[in-house]
Image (cartoon, rainbow, N blue to C red; front, side, top):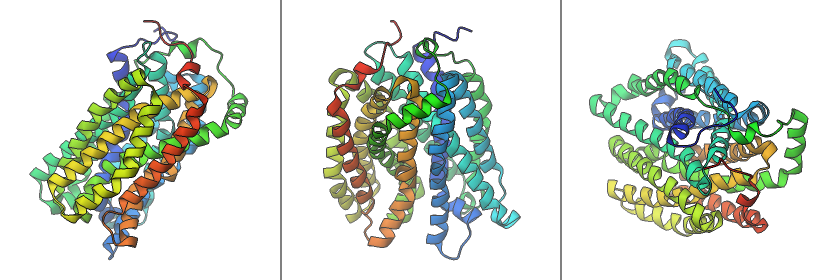
Length: 430
């Protein structure tokens, strides 16, 4: 196997994004069945407390992402994109298997929630570098003038996981009564994820190293830390830019079923159908907007999407909660999907272009993971708390509005330096 020249094209993109699919599939399944997981592992006489404990455990995994970004991102920058992506997949799979097979609180007591938390922390640690590793790999194998289109498939692969998880949920809810799903049916999607693991390992092992990594001298740990310190301001601004995309994504995907059922009092099937539709539209918008960013630049899409989110999210959710229905939830979800796809389609590739070559994976992963740990990953929990604290079912708009304002400000600050694509370096020859 030639480890200095990774191929570009659909096959190469497919091989690298399969791990992204597994990571997001498991995250989505946890978010979809947060209420049932709360009953199984965090039993309480207070339904709100049980759900909050479940969602807090969901968010706790994101706290490990910055550590994973430093440790595993540094490993990828030192030892190569291919080796690092295989390592992150192994750690991620261990977390998936652990959560899938842990008995409930009724069987093993307090050990059950502890093991679930360990599984989530392990997943968060691996995910800290997974997104960065995949995004950088795609950026470095992209054909000239198509970097935005290539990198957009990192996020697009996650939407396949959203759609698959939602479709599986629809099938299960049509086969089993809600009571059965709450007792043990929610475990089936986790078992399905466990069965996918060996196949994804086989696919990812066929990856080859990128030409850009093979053409340079890999930095040591001291050099990586020195470069991170020198670029601390750039990484911090990147954190703010990522906040917009992570809050948007988890609001319209992981939190949507809980919002539809627990807040709007719509059926579980209806909420899952809306989530599946959002995943499909995300899958379309992301590569389209990534390709558009190759033509018009990253900044225009980032500014337009963040401004539109800031101005429309509160009126949209107020309209939804005034008369909740499947149709209104779908329309609002699809509007937010368009804004998310526009922003993220330009944001992810811009972040790879902003980071210096020697710490491209570490810097990207650190910015992304800190944003997810501080805002994005806790979106389901924060939305639940805001609704409880304010009494307004439209309160999630406040959380997304703050993220959009931060993203807009950081975008304007970062792009004062000019087009980041000009400093990225050579791409694969066509």
